[in-house]
Image (tube, rainbow, N blue to C red; front, top):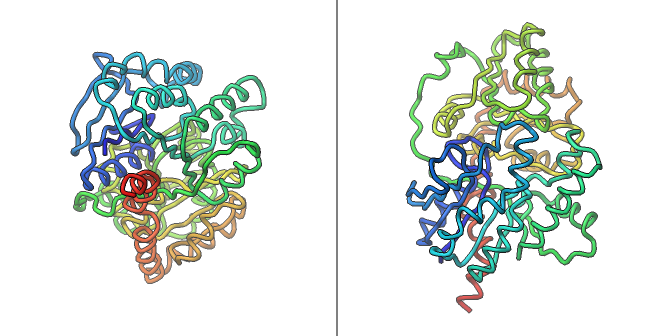
Length: 400
């Protein structure tokens, strides 16, 4: 089968969307499928660049900067994203038809492009829906219920309508569809996040010693520093752990909240926190492999469900997870049932600190939960199971 994967970012970014789609593509390739991964990109000399990377055909289409751009510039480019990618990639699309299109959201601006590709190729489409926009923006305080909200809501609806099947990341997201689209006959199912079970080797790179953390129990947080992650939550935790000399926190990444995080570390005099800029994917994975506890923080204001992609890296390297999440988040039950980590609600600062102290002081507990986390990855969050689920909607019909 010829499969096209469409996502709004790809390597060398460390965004979880790029890793998820890469791992899905790699799994499909091992099964003998011909895989193209299509993504917008900045800094290209021409309109389009095609390369073979890890056995995948990577099609990068010039779009201008999206991630990290000024809000107005990013908004304008995203609104025009489908039109830009169709105009600059049309000849390539016509020359390389596919039998299945799998596309990732966010962004919510792929709907028009997906409709055109489905018509051109005569193929079905599967939407991998992670953060639900624009509700995500409303709940993080970025967006009100003004004209922009209704523009995003319209594009959200268009993107959903372009899909034959929609895979959400959590059972709680099914409730969102029932409440917001009661008259729409969307075909929605839970598709858990996934990761490959066979990462390249990550030999020790001396990150502990380089960062002055050789004798510490390191609580690692990697990825985007945004409003959704409530970075102040982590700074409050670090403040509460100042009396735990063996504990340290390492924050690796960047985003809109980076200046505030840096200022907060200085103002609080937090000598137990190391702030590190974003790194390439291979370096990121090697860092995760060296440390002790994986941190997750989600804003308390969230009502939609979110299971961050960074969880998968933690599970892969058998790190126990310490999470502080929004009410109703399914991650609490997942970690509890698997005995793979400890979790509380965001705002329960004393409990968050108590759980961190427990992990910092108990090596046996960390080891046991880490092993259980790896088992959880293998049984519930593997790229193989995701590929089975997506392909099963169509390959079973072909073989019947």
